[in-house]
Amino acid sequence: MRQLGSTTTTRRQVVKAGSATAAALALGSRAGNARAQEKAKIRWWHISTAEAEQAAWKALADSFVAANSNVEVEITVIENQAFKAKLATAMQSGDPPDVFQSWGGGVLFEYAEAGLVKDISADLADGWGDTFLPAALNLYGTDGKYFGVPWNMGVVVVWYNKALFAQAGIEKTPTTWAEFLMVVQTLKDAGITPITVGEGDKWPGHFYWVYLAIRNGGKPAFDAAYSREGSFADPPFVQSGANLKELVDMEPFQEGFLGQNYNDAETLLANGQVAMEVMGHWSPGNQRSLAENGEGLGDDLAFFPFPVVEGGAGNPTDVLGGGNGFGIGKNAPPETIAFVKHLTTVDAQVALMDLGLTVPPVIKGAETAMTDPNLVAIADLLAEAEYLQLFYDQFLPLAVGEAVNDAVQGLFAGTSSPEDVAQQIEDVASQEMD
Image 1 (cartoon, one colour):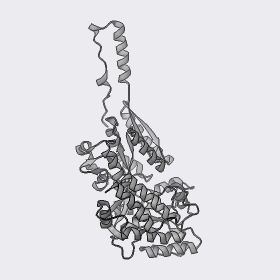
Image 2 (tube, helix red, strand yellow):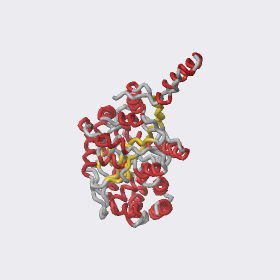
Image 3 (cartoon, one colour):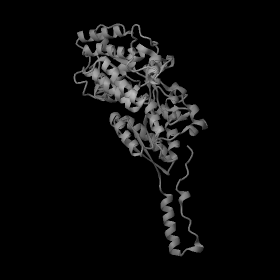
Image 4 (cartoon, rainbow, N blue to C red):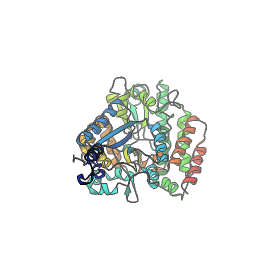
């Protein structure tokens, strides 16, 4: 990697010998040397809390610092939900971290509109942008301007334990919502907890409602609501709540699911205690970190696409997904771009692949290193999709995304009706988006 020059040398005071005493010259020299030794600090916040993942990211940061002695990287690791709150606070204070976890979409664009993140379009135009898969990179750009870059991208699917399916006598994975509910009942009848969900974090449950909206209304329904030509209280969204209520009423989830977080819930699947989880492409890697055996379910882990809804307007290949990326704060030192470039090389993608962090990868050429058959299949599913919908709580404006999560949690808790959920979301959307 190119050695970066010090940013402090341009600020060094030059003391002319002809106009200073020897003592002043010495003092000026010492001050100049101190400033020359100052390092550019890059503050990086990420959400990869598993020990192995933290170590892998730190190794990449350390290798950058080793090649760039004028830079130091200060890493702060924050759990997903806590991160979102802390980042919002930092943004409100006008002092965002230099590099931070982002999912792209409306939340990032809100920060951009407020002038809180850097426009890195010119940096991407020098060839860096051509190294990314366009569909992944485009989640971080709007109106021709880019404010971040991805480091993985995939889709949400239904992960399941093949051994528990076999134990319950289930020979075929479901393709429709009706078949899915039948599988849930069959698992319950066999004494197996069908599904794990960490609804204490809210976002895992929103996957169900959004996927059902994709199945019931397809892209046209979302586009109409988003453009405000339609509404989030339109029939496809109400129907999605009705479908989800069918599932909730079956009581298919683990005990205490309303108070448990994502890792609590996924630990159960990783250790073979539940049969299914609706979760993203990152799940296998996280399961390995949570499993008592350090490996997870191994060959017993598989997935099937989220079921279609009979009579729904969505295309069966439509998917809910997205990925992780890096946003860059407005006050980030110039060296930050080189650092993020370092984190998004083919070599970096491959180095993180065994942990499941960069799968599916977003840098061209890295896909040849994938070996996990589940993740290769996820990449194929993504490639077949005509419509990929980014998670609502990231694509929509921040307040609307929060309204989705809050309203859907009410449906899981049995305190809100399908109509209530849709109207609660629409009420906020009408305030924030009209």
